[in-house]
Length: 179
Image 1: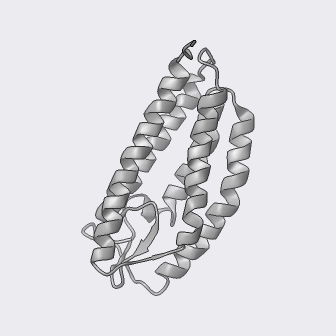
Image 2: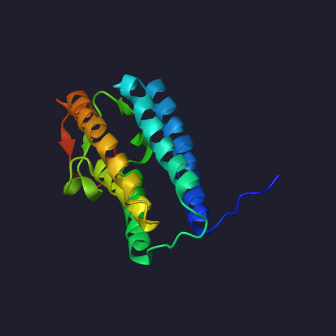
């Protein structure tokens, strides 16, 4: 049986997959802790669609990007910058960051870090990632497909999240970390 050659594109994709799996571990831990503290999850029905989109996006990239595909260094740098944005969001939310919509009644909304400027910074980062990473390898059609699938899901999720968070007061102090 012939082994499939792995190139730098696949190494990059495996690193992204490992990052996502690590984030899922953190998110699940935070979700369990928040639920134990009395939080509630909303919008659970659409969550598998996001998991499918993101897993499918990475799997499709891994399957169709050749091992010797050229790598656009500028776009890769932009993707790395998006990862810094992702880490900033996660660090800002701390123990309140999850991949689900989990809200703890009475906890103030975060208005620091990237939330000072954008209400939903993570969704901007994700939209950028879904488009930029395929373009790093010249897979423009995957960028278009992922974006077209992501837009309606994200718009729905933002509505669900905004409804879940309505009525919560915001706290601008550096000491607040609730979402």
